[in-house]
Image (spheres, rainbow, N blue to C red):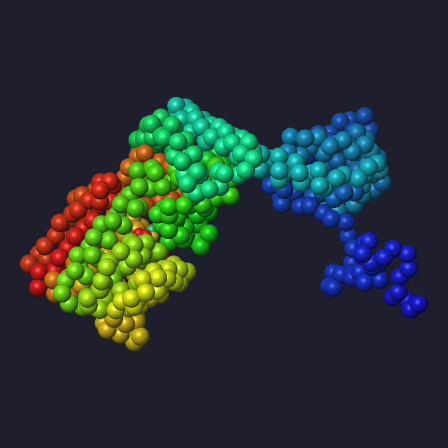
Length: 504
Ligand SMILES: C[S@@+](CC[C@H](N)C(=O)[O-])C[C@H]1O[C@@H](n2cnc3c(N)ncnc32)[C@H](O)[C@@H]1O
């Protein structure tokens, strides 16, 4: 056996000691010390010395075996002198340390000296627990709760809790239903849909009023209240919601942003997604609130606009900017009976995953038709910024050659993220890319309190909602004689469309 071979326990039972490593650089061992400044609190020490009690002596560093102290006045100390009833006060707690010896008395001009414990060592873990967990973390929690109480109206907080309680109850009931459903029929898409629909119909009258009241009241909040209100609502609501992919994406922003293309897909599926009935219920809920229904309805407006353009007796080009899953095109390409002329579709999105999924699905629809229609897709992994200010070279060429002379440009779910000056500039730029008699159609959601409270306060999904005058204002930079401009609504009335047609 050589010196590195071990006997006894097998390697699987623990480390092979011969394989353990020492330090690579810091070889000299010293017990851990904490600078009191690092603890972020003022700590003091008290003791008895020769019948006199000293208290409030400042602690400058702490180790398991002793303390560094600094007195405000000279003390009669000598090396090895005994201190009794030593205690360390930190973060409102007192650690009794018994007796200690003075070491290095007043070697500094500033009355510093050290003491060395004679009894049990001080647990630095306990000191840190006290400091970082109790004082800082729990302290912050208590401060936050006090802020909620001070700044947020009690009736508003009560409404948030009511909303949360309803969701918990629904989860309990649906979990119970699942457990009693021995054959697992709830998983059947139609049955899930019916069950979730019945629950939604039962709660929605009261819940929509609650959401409405919460949103209207929150509209009067100042910036501090809005921030506190969002934190108050989100910490409750997101205890239950992450099981739903739609709501979880909105809140957790898995791609740095919500990855909305997937949300738009989930918003328009006929099958509920989720491994529990409650998760499916939340999916149903997301689809059936007013703005949830608008996701489908606004796609209907785009569908009709595309259908109108391709009904012309000539080849046409259309562009969907921020196309996401382009569910409206999937439907249309499946439903149009015959394509007499070539149709070129430009799909533009900054998210490569969105484009990949969009084009895969559109190709699937086309191949399912079996008639090989003259439809061409161009997936352009391009952002709005590149359209507005393309770099010289490839980007400029692409915009000039490919993204121009388009018969219909439409965009939904993009302007809801743009502030008015940028939205105006984008509108003018897109209008310039139209072919003569081309059409630009820009959708933007309206604020609907029954939905927007949940979006902003529940899942932190912040959009720029617009009113009719702001939609008209988007056309500000377009030359009036070149354009006829109107504002349309989808069938829910909750998505407005700026509809600009080039006259020549
Ligand atoms: C809410 S989704 C809308 C998708 C689709 N238009 C619909 O209605 O189903 C927003 C889409 O905008 C895309 N997007 C966001 N910012 C963009 C930008 N600056 N340039 C291009 N696409 C963008 C996202 O990747 C996402 O697919």
